[in-house]
Each structure stands twice: as C-alpha cells, then as structure tokens.
Image 1 (cartoon, helix red, strand yellow):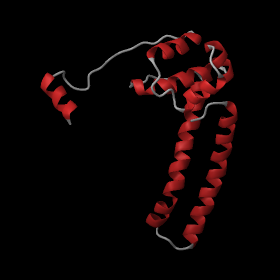
Image 2 (image 1 turned 90 degrees about the vertical axis):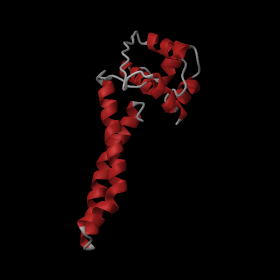
Image 3 (image 1 turned 135 degrees about the vertical axis):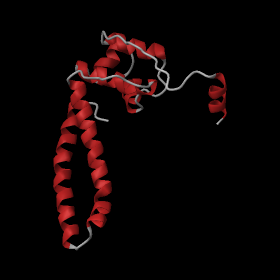
Length: 154
C-alpha cells in the first residue's frame, strides 16, 4: 500500500520501468519461438505484480482526490483511516501529534492497516479529520435461525 508521496513517486517510476522490462522479456521469449500460451504463462507473474502496482497507484490517486468510495465490510476500515490521513495531507507524524501517540505507533498501525482497531480508536481518528461515518447494513441472505446456526457450525 502506498502511504505517502515518496512511495507514490517510486511506484510510478517502477511502473514505467516494469513496462520496459515486460516488453523486453516478451520480445526475448518470442525470439525463442515460444507459443503465445507459453509466453503468457512466463509473463504472468510479472504482469500480475505490475497490475497490483497499477491498482495501488490508482487507489492513492483517488484518495488524494478525496474519492474514498463506500466500504462494504468493517475489514476495510483500516484502509479508510489511512486514506483519510493521506487525503488531508497529514503525515504520520502529524497524526501522531493529534492523537498524542508516537509516530512509531501510527506507522505500526498503518503497516497493519489498523487490524483489530477498536471502534473507540477508529472514531477518535475519524474525528481528527472532521469526518463522519454513515452506515447501512444489507443482508446477503434472509435471516433464518436454522440457516444461521448451520452456517456457524460449518
């Protein structure tokens, strides 16, 4: 995950570099007279990593524009907290000062994408940015006691 401008610039540089490397690798494989299937299979790991980096860059650019989108699971709260910091232009050091914690604590929390963050702590961070949360719960399946209990035992 890209967390600051320095990491963003490095990711953009790597994307350009990766494109060149992928093109050269593809040409080399074609010169070996490999089939298109073999070439695709050989390039797959590089292309997958490249696509992941593209998605990270796109996410960071959306966040900088304050385009957070909706989250569909509470598991995504951590990324949202990081996005709020990035969109506001605060550094980890700035956020640490606002929360009266160490910069190292913010760094650890963000590295772990606030995994296991308490609701109180998440709310405190959200308040720093003057943001608010809107919630909506939608059921994926009907609430049937037997189905719920059966799913819980599997």
